[in-house]
Length: 226
Picture 1 (cartoon, rainbow, N blue to C red):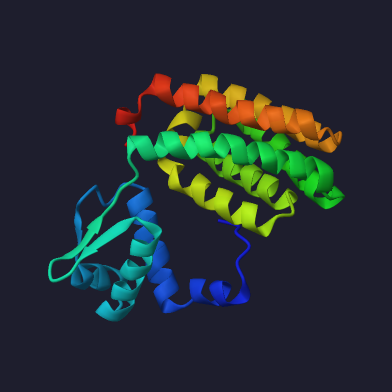
Picture 2: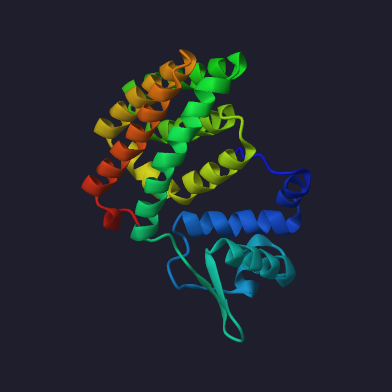
């Protein structure tokens, strides 16, 4: 993710513990590790080519994030993202992304607008080609640029995490041709409202975008994804 951390956090991300943390976190969010599965330090360390110490430290960090439960004298167990978590995350995102779009319309720079427009154009091209892997990547880039354009380090950090938590769900919905076309159109409308400095409209369109994604998820069926 393109989060705005302080320098200490950025250094930690590239430390051994940081790399192990990112790897385990990614595997949990991608569904490699299922709910209540035990995360064995020795096995993970062997897989990642590290000792048990950075694995243990990473698991403690993941416990603080709520993705792992550590039971003394027993082990560490996965807290996977549940269907309720997904619904909660999207409802929270609906409000926060609206605020994000509003602030972006008020503070976006020309460079950020140019970057967003380039992403939109590429998205439209790959939508026509039904290149869903590329669309997933571009969806990430659009939202990252939107968060950055809000000019709020705190809001960007919170939204980046929420966006990351539902990556499996987002990837599944984008792979639907009908939803991918509509999502691209919605991104274009949000961009144009931001470009035209219309904060009220940008906020409403961003909220609608997330609400329509929720509707699409419900039609698709969360049990088919998680």
